[in-house]
Every structure is written in C-alpha cells, then in structure tokens.
Image (cartoon, rainbow, N blue to C red; front, side, top):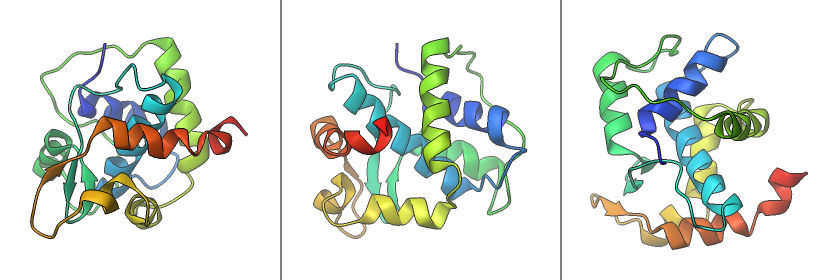
Amino acid sequence: MPYNPTTIANYFIERYGKAGELTPMKLLKLTYIAYGWYLAITDGKKRLTNEHPIAWDMGPVFPTLYSNIKKNYKKWNITTTILTALTETITEQDKTFLDKIWSIYGKFDGIYLSALTHQDGTPWRSVYSKGCNIPLKDEDIYRHYKGKMATIDG
C-alpha cells in the first residue's frame, strides 16, 4: 500500500530529525529519492507514495508534502513531525528501506540532493519546462534509478 508523502517525510523526521539538519529542501528531495529507489527495487511494480512527483522549477516535488511543510516551516531545520490528519503505519520492511536511503543520502544537504535530481539524464531534467508543473512518469523514474542499482546495493 503506498503512503502519503508526508508519512514518509515524518518517518525521516522522527528517526533522524535530531541527528542532523533536515531542512524543507532536504526532506522534499529525500522523499523523492526514496520514491525513485522504491520503484527500482520493486521493478516498477510498487510505488512508495500515493502521489506522483511533479516537475516544478525547484525540482521534483510532491505537492501535498510541499504544502504541508510550507504551512509550518520556512528554511529552518525541521525537528518535529509535520501535522497531518493521516495515521499511516510504515511496515518494518519499508522502514528498513528508508533507513538504507538515509544511510546513503542523509549525510548530504538539500542543495546537494537537489543538484542530484537536476542532473542531465534525470527524469526531472527530461520533462522540465520553466513555469510548468509537469507530472513525472513512473516509467522514467524507474528506468533512471534502476540504472543506478549498483550504488544502493554496494
């Protein structure tokens, strides 16, 4: 069952919010990167979130997560969970997956993670058009992350 993007973000906040800097940008990018890797490890058969990322000027974004963060935070570090009416429980298997994502990407700041999602050949780069909000296709995200499988398995 896919989760709301805010549920994924809240997992990172609960588990790692006190350990390092979790800015809005870092949280948005970590959630997107987790989405991409999840598609890759499930061979495109399962989505991590129930919302598709959109190619905004600032990169790939889950609009509801962005909105939830914007209501409560600006550029400051996020140390408390994002308020939401949802009560979803992440499975232990998915928690293990998210911990793996953190172990690889958690050491980087939001600017670095954003740069990763903006590189040539990324799904965002292939559809981005200034001022347009274009949904990213799961097939493109899957292909991109599947092509990088050795880096997460290592």
